[in-house]
Image 1 (cartoon, rainbow, N blue to C red):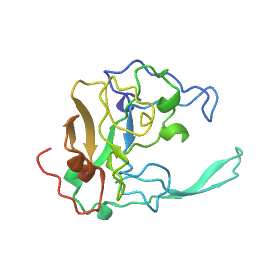
Image 2 (cartoon, rainbow, N blue to C red):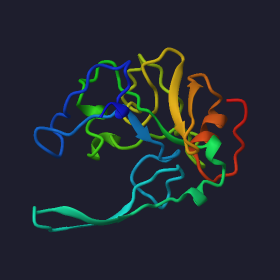
Image 3 (tube, helix red, strand yellow):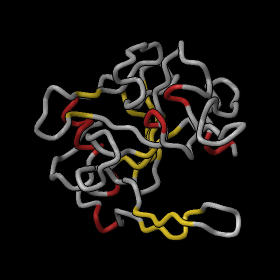
Length: 189
């Protein structure tokens, strides 16, 4: 579906060596998990974090039988107009389309289903600014936001608005935008 694809990126392909064969569909946007990478929903501080789910057998073999979201609109205490919901995921230019950090949006390999931004809570060693289009930094390539557009990255906010965010945004402001309930004030972005 074209809504999941940025027109400035190469044509979509199916993911390679993913959880399904021949592969799942790609998407150029990921939910903002906040500042803490990984799948630990108890520590995540973004607007969208992993749901709790029950996996079991159905008539086709394996299925998700139930799921429950981990956040609600009422949990966005920092304000829906100043909290990221989705953003363009950074993909290293040398990365093969459909592999590494550009896998299926339905899989969980290499953070393909989420991204983080800003300064991780109480850990200034883990800083993730927005990535410029030509960034080849493999250490954070599968965790950061960044699109193919010079100087900006596109984000959808929790209120449904879409805004261009400068790649040079102050890291504290980026942290405030990435988190849902930490009390930081995001001004002048």
